[in-house]
Amino acid sequence: MDSQSSCVVVTGFGPFRQHLVNSSWEAVKELSKLGLGTDMAVELRTLQLPVDYREAKQRVTRIWEDFQPQLAVHVGMDTSAKVIFLEQCGKNRSYQDADIRGFRPEGSVCLPGGPDVIESVVSMKAVCKNIVVEDVDVAYSRDAGRYVCDYVYYLSLHHGNRHAALIHTPPLSHWLPASLLGRTLQVIIQEMLEETGKTQANRTAK
Image 1 (cartoon, rainbow, N blue to C red):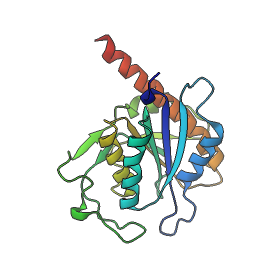
Image 2: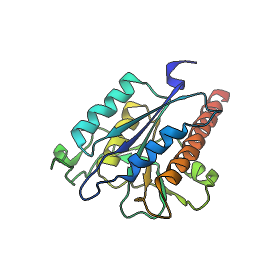
Image 3: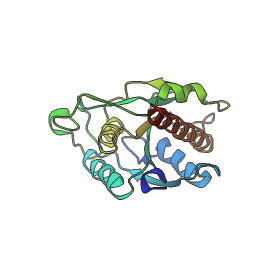
């Protein structure tokens, strides 16, 4: 097995604005305890990213240079969400909201000269259809919101030849504690790996 098929990197984000606890990182910490499941022959690596465009950009670049993962899954918190969203694509333009250091990307773009949209190789619609976790709703999305989450996603799709994913989680609550979010992440990522495996098998068969 080569290095590109043996590692999955999962990232969450640190605090931002008034949100001192970021549900994305709490969920990723729970996932790191659970692992990806005994039947998954891949190594799981977890990292926290700051809600900082420049620093996050450097770390995403290093993820692809150092680990060459089979898949990079970025988890972010959508403060207004009531369900978990699986984001199909990253967008290059309209990054106008300042990060935790007050910085905005020059020209409001992620990658000057890059395509407006990059789609993940993972079919998020297919993944959504196959996810069954009691008390958790998972939905498909094509608009990740133009903040550091979407910025990171676009960069990761670019560096990883589209082998990246973005999952948006709601804030923690009594009905959605970190433990349940972590379990749900495990199920979603297992399904993403199954889905990308099917896609590669179909391409090989053609």
